[in-house]
Image (cartoon, rainbow, N blue to C red; front, top):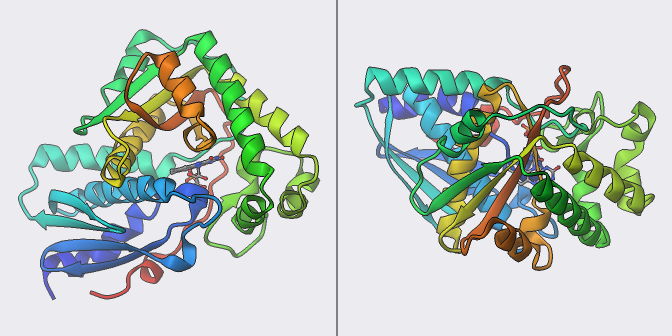
Amino acid sequence: MDKLSESLTKIVDIARLAPSVHNTQPWRISTQNNSIVVELDPRFTLTDGDPTGRETIISLGIFCEALTLSAATFGFACQSAKLDDRRAELKFDENVSEQARMDADSKIRLLRTRCTDRSIYKMRELSDVDLQSLQASSHIDGVQVMADSDPDHIKKTAGLTAQGIQLALSNPKFRSELSQYVVVQNSHKKRGISVRSLYIPGLIAFVEPFILRLGIALGQEVKLEKKRWLSSSGLVFITTDGDMPEYWFAAGKAYLEVALAIEALGLSQATSAATVEASTFHEDIEQMLGTSKRLQCVIRIGEGQKNRAYSPRVDAAELITSN
Ligand SMILES: Cc1cc2nc3c(=O)[nH]c(=O)nc-3n(C[C@H](O)[C@H](O)[C@H](O)COP(=O)(O)O)c2cc1C
């Protein structure tokens, strides 16, 4: 067995902390001649929650970036990360500089602590330096990161996100699939969104999967989502030069770097695919930002809860198919 294969379980044990759409973690991981190969596990890819597959490929980009960072801490440098249809291949050698290893170590510390916080945030003044550090957190070809705290942008994005959520939740199939990825307290599920990360009253949290499936109180859900987004102190937008899966994958890599930079600032984060996926809302945001690029991700940031709610993860051994 080569060195990379020997270290695979340790590498994946950290990378599995990467966020993914609905926390589906649809990964099947193997090694092949100094490469790590990640394929999508069709049992856990979304149908109604992600009809184009964009959110899953963004998630795959995030996961591959996490694998790259994790592998660096064990002495493997990623030479290339390529997407080929629904499969990614990361080629490694053993030439990691001490500096790269230390950088990866500090990012992994942030990966271990970050999570999605869907609470209503408290306002926190963001300095230009903070916003610039987020914009500078990623240098991926064909990907742009914009961070701002413009109250008009926050208001417009909150309104469009709420409309996007309303459209998504009006689809019973979307709701039914999502409800399968909601994790109530004391559940043994290893995939899905912890209800604790929603910061809603305990009793409602307990019945949230049923409420969702049956479509009860959708208007309240939409109003709450608007309130959450209005409470943002700032927003981060990720755009790309084009709109092919290669760009979605690249956006995912940038997403992880940005997410870790937000964590480094001590801020909370949450995202929504609503403006990216629903109707033509992405065009409204692109126009608002004055860009001709394609919107791929929007992250809200602010001062959230001190008490963090982590969503579960699948064990590394379950994600690895062979060595
Ligand atoms: C590509 C992508 C799209 C996402 N879309 C949404 C979304 O529309 N709404 C939401 O509440 N969370 C969304 N999330 C957040 C995930 O649900 C979350 O990352 C996952 O449950 C894991 O939890 P964690 O971020 O706390 O580790 C998205 C995450 C990713 C990576």
